[in-house]
Length: 252
Length: 303
Image 1 (cartoon, chains in turn orange, cyan):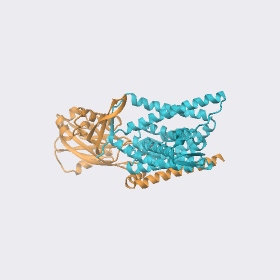
Image 2 (cartoon, rainbow over the protein chains, first blue to last red; image 1 turned 90 degrees about the horizontal axis):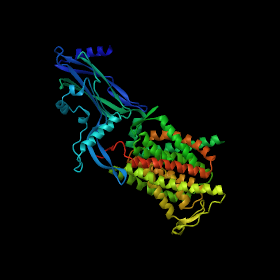
Image 3 (cartoon, rainbow over the protein chains, first blue to last red; image 1 turned 60 degrees about the vertical axis):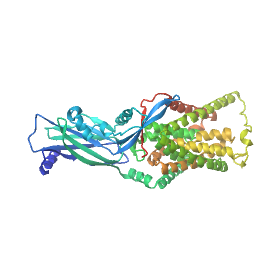
Image 4 (cartoon, chains in turn brown, green; image 1 turned 60 degrees about the horizontal axis):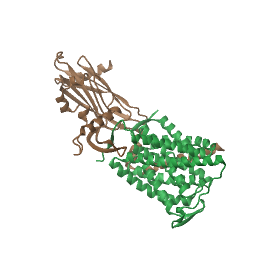
């Protein structure tokens, strides 16, 4: 109920365009605490329109959530001298640390290939590999392996029919973030499509950061590595010393 | 209870790590080894990135060795002079090891090197120790006295030095070399090297068994402390939260282990330890020989 109330308020206040997305997020910040077990973001919104609902050509919604991209080296093992050794390597120029696609219907129905190419929506479009060394002829296998490995650890996912679209107007979805999340600037994109063509795009940032002691330790390990190392040693020495004390006290 | 490790960037079960620390602590209390050779592969298995596992293990060994060496100081079973010579070699070896580690990391072969080192050294040490303790068990069963060690090639080298606590007058070259070797291994494998150092001191240097463990622990503290600092400043891979979780379990386990160890005979202990070493070795060897389910691995790019 409250959701709908917020929607109505949003609808009332925004300036008009043909058909456009009005959006809310349950949170635009994800805090990785020391006991972080993953999180869930509720993405909800409404479609604002000037014209009556076109029942003949229904709308669809495609939502992506993307983590910060970085280059990744993918290595392949081969049997050499009887043991499995890393041999070939391909650098994938940009691979998001997290990527989720969720749609209101079967992907091939809600999005045409051309629009996918234009907006880089599906997982294989989000992973960008410019080229491989000359000696490697099957560089796609490396990008596929990257996607496969990250899908298995829950970092990349495609959920068809994951978006609930009601009355061609209200939509909502949950995007679950795994426990092995890295921090950075994330972005959610909401695509409104009709017959596979993108009608409107809405982008909104989501900040994912470590907080509390985790953040403090990470920052210290990068800015003052020597101090951090000495602190690790001090803790180890103190633990060893107190163990010896407790042990000899128990013996007596 | 899940804990998010800030450096490893993975979420792990705290009780699982307590348990692992405790298990390895029991073994290290029983056998007088740091237990790194067991812990590092276990951490790989839990999903800690190898680089973080290796660096953090070094930090954990500082704690357990420090705890152990205090007990040995009380019993005056630490040869400080021998320890210092081993240490000089060890520091040099550790620095060399980190250079090798970083070079191999850039080649993408660090995983392989760590595994090969494990298989080779665990196999050699476990096998030798197993045969030796089997022989010792048979001898005591027959009632024969253990043979005294005679002089070998080690005693004919120059630069002789007196090691009073060990009752030795030998060249400094072999202890230096043993130190370098163990230092390299400590840096690459994330182990204190106790499982190599102890047999080397007994069989190569001919030190009396009662001073071996204390002296080895003494120098391991410094080598692993140095390794920890090098990893912390060059690779940023020491995870202090992981180290603390392992420490707590390890410290409690070591107490239990020491009590179990007191009830067993020396030969029984050694044969058990060699059995564990060989099992770990076999598991790692199989991983290298059998085709992995996933042929591809991901790594961070350097640029």
